[in-house]
Figure 1 (tube, one colour):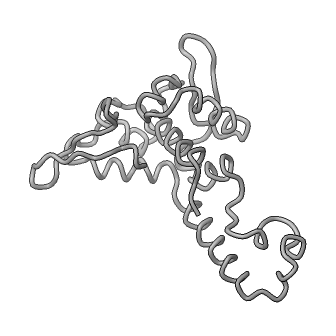
Figure 2 (cartoon, helix red, strand yellow):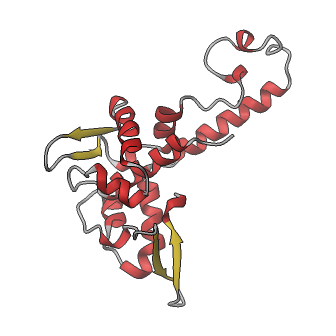
Figure 3 (cartoon, one colour):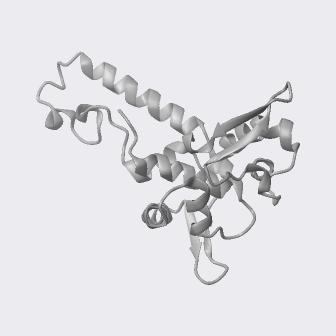
Length: 190
């Protein structure tokens, strides 16, 4: 099982909005540049997220997108299910009557495996909020930027400068390890 680009890029775009939480609308062009995703593709994803009530949009020169709820109140599961649909590793554990999906559903021992897998995946995705991702970013970057930066702003749910966590043109940023050596991290893997 693998998430499509819809799910992966959608989570990255929502993470970007969480990093800018409390700063007002974030232009789609900026999200596309920072996350290295086509602006047209992001527009499609944002339309789905807007219809689901996860983001709000505003038009005009100062327009863009922002989270409809606090980062702590939006889980990765919320985002993935909007963009990918239900997480069902097999048809027999999806919505509806399992016997309609598979004539052996009532007697199939493997159905237990698929049910537990579905439950486990959903439990993990629902246990991680956008705030958790921001907190993780803050802890990874704390030795180079202290308590400033967008990740800290997201973690506090307040305004704050964003320069410390934005990616460069190549999608990489450097940060210092505990020994003071620079490390380069590919932010596109989020």
